[in-house]
Amino acid sequence: MADSVLIEGLVVETVVGVYDWEREVTQELVVDLDMAWDNRAPGASDDVADALDYALVSERIGQCLKELRPKLLEHGAEVLAEVLQREFAVGWLRLTLRKPGAVPTARSVGVCIERGVR
Ligand SMILES: Nc1nc2c(c(=O)[nH]1)N=C([C@H](O)[C@@H](O)CO)CN2
Image (cartoon, rainbow, N blue to C red; front, top):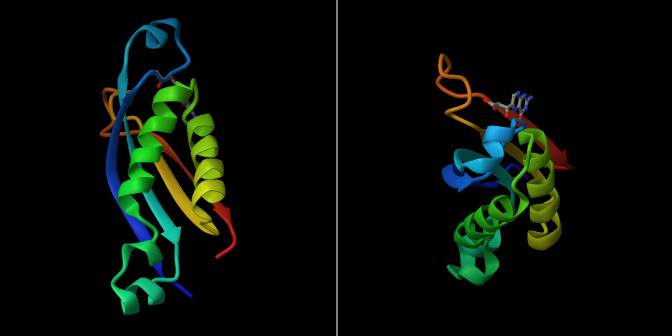
């Protein structure tokens, strides 16, 4: 089963970073997410109750990152993956967390993790 539900370019403004000055400001994080999900049931029923609701997942990601205020992107990504797997019953996911403003000479920097079994 190779079906997915996708979220791309989700922007969250939060406190993030390892340096003292970074604990005093908010910065932009960008989340890309590929979540394994069997889309046959919602495909047949046309009922969002059968779907992995990307709007609810997006809202939860924003809430989680704003509360967490991670120092490292790695920690933010790991906690997000745990929350999504537990609360939304996502079996496998690939999550990319980018911090576009971190390195002025790069378009973006970030981390990518895969968790679970497809
Ligand atoms: N692998 C990582 N390297 C760095 C991180 C990070 O989260 N993961 N963070 C920083 C600083 O917070 C940086 O973004 C400030 O510009 C440095 N390296």
